Length: 426
Image 1 (cartoon, one colour):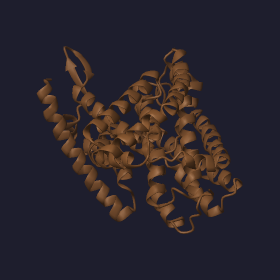
Image 2 (cartoon, rainbow, N blue to C red):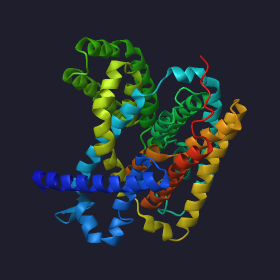
Image 3 (tube, rainbow, N blue to C red):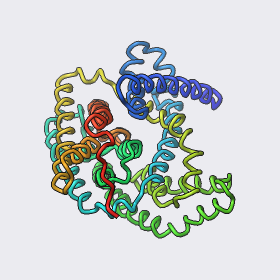
């Protein structure tokens, strides 16, 4: 397939994705009380074989072809590689923006409570994930036949521990809770849970690929990268001074910033903790002020409306809801959803209450921590790409991610709203 043909197909894919995401997002906001990002998760599934492929299989396979034939051997279709790269660019820029809005000073204010909520958000979901994996021992159905039982158990535990940190940050910001004890506690615990889940994933991939250095590079390299970026913060502060001298974020400032983000994403991807974390940490370490305002103004709109929907669609193309009707898969899916809700919502709520939060705030924290969203899709895509999990388990876990994420916004708005928010001390 020529480069011109790939470009032509990509632009058609982009047009369809944007229109469908906008239509589904409008419906969700108007009638379901959902955010645009949540509905884009659902739109991605609808564009895959679950609905579009069911109603118009030939059109769906032409627009989003999974394989191509070279000689007599099937290979991954080049257009999917183009879509994947574009989706990763959107994901990296989005996580950079999330990091840019993250206030590290808030973490120190609620460090003790964050540790207890975070541990509860890891231990109980992990244990329930391991328990669920014991019912998934059919060879090749949920996990790759070569995957060891403990590898499957740890993967399930890590996947259950994930929190939709970008969505959590967005809800807290939109509700005006970024400076409250409840908002601070949820952000700190969510960030910690995701970091621990990614460390567990690195261990699984290290064992599954028979490369012990994988986990060493991922965990050790990740720690070194974090230290390096924290030490580089004084140097990065010059971007703010540069912006103030120029009066705005000029093209050279933007190019320098994007180059730094790209290098960070490349490095963390190369060591096995993936590009999104390099982008997020870079955002956290960037200066606040006119620079951050200017960068957000230039990047946020194109990222959230143009590029991020590509990732949700790419994930949806691997989701086959029809697999839920095979054997006992639906029963397993219901158990996974139940365990996910109990593990995160109940566990984090009780821990927050013991940390001194009111029942109202504690319940709100549990609701927010229960959402899996974007981060769950990332970890699932990695597991599928490495061959650890099968499309069946991928679909089960996507269902869990959608259910727990869709629950978050309306329940949080109904139970908590913005009234009664208490400012963080100091």
